[in-house]
View 1 (cartoon, rainbow, N blue to C red):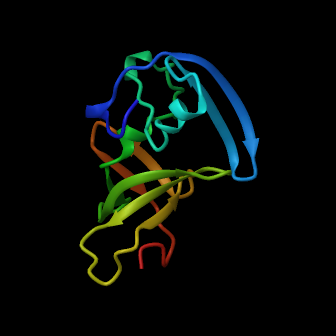
View 2 (cartoon, helix red, strand yellow; view 1 turned 90 degrees about the vertical axis):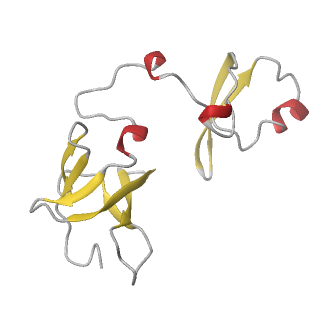
Length: 139
């Protein structure tokens, strides 16, 4: 646990509680050495990290988000559109956040729904995601 992977400190999880809030699902962790609210407050805004070897195996079409960040985003014709900057989790499907390639006029990221209609191929070995954008998606 920590603010970045290189500054993370191992913590043992003693308990997990799932809770539904107005803002969506929430997972509460009880960590070793965190016995009161004051100790828990000191951990706010920190990230939880896990070694990939400790994670459950992925399904055939599943990918870890950290493997997608940094991939080139290209059209089926090979035109480079940008780079995956992140993945947002929406209720219906994930959304790829794409930093546009050399677009001085529009520095807002493009958002690509993570569905087969738009995302045609995820090629981790080739370092790219092949997309079929609709008109206006990258304008």
